[in-house]
Length: 394
Image 1: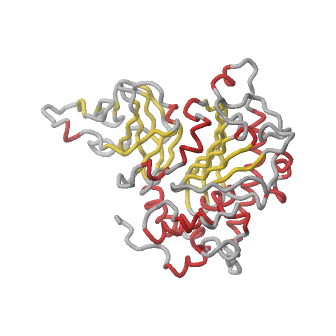
Image 2: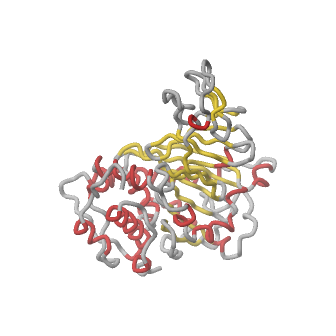
Image 3: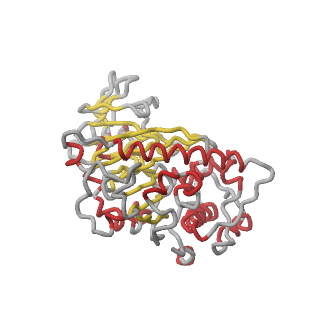
């Protein structure tokens, strides 16, 4: 443990989370409403783990650079002359000026501080500083941050001491690989700011118990009680839902404006899989596109959510292609969800709120809550135990 020594909950406060489905509950209200718990999560669950910071494909060329938010840190991502994506803490070795502002993008042959023009090579080694001679370049190189690419996404471990990304992901690649997200192209993107806790967004994503009540359009194309729960070996939760016989994909009409992704089996073309990778990436893999939600918590009660729609390069290049059939459907569904989870967040602030039991249709919610409870008790995110998976019933 580093800065925050105290754990945010005592074991007895979380005991009900580990009970069998039908008896287990969600996390205590303080997990969602407390600023102190939120700060602990940023340090331990975000900084101390692997955070998705966007698409690695956004930096395709040597010299491409951007600054991204990863937990409490801003990390400079740089595509090197050797094609490798590197990360550095976004602070000049002179007096700490940010090398780029968060979200800023440039492409140039060096990294340069805009304050006093200290210059670094793309691999972080100091190249020169105005007015200095004989400065030890190695001693003043940029401090590296851990960055890895996985299926087209970039991940950052801000603390530098998390287990390998492969351990964090576990068997997730087995489920994602057939969709080849690394070759897909972002054809549309929307950003939302939701007045709710980031964990409530995860929980809502992991169940369709609510779908009959707030998603009538979704229920037209997929039965809300369909599919199966997956049994992960990494720090994630997820499952599938089936498409109705009349639907080719998730759209308002059930019709697809694209083509099935290559390499999918007949079974995979009749389902959508929903993956929630802790702490901040939701991956929804459809027969003809992949959609992601990438969450950046602002505080305990506000979360920025970037939604992207990825399609095959063949579809994007085809004349007249329009991703709107997928965007329109999910933008509507997203806004229905945001309205619901904002209400949940407000309701959790009531003196009368006591977490109720989870149903057998909320097994993936329970698994997410168990993963968070294990992080609260152990000080970092860990993969589920076998007994955690035994409670998945679908």
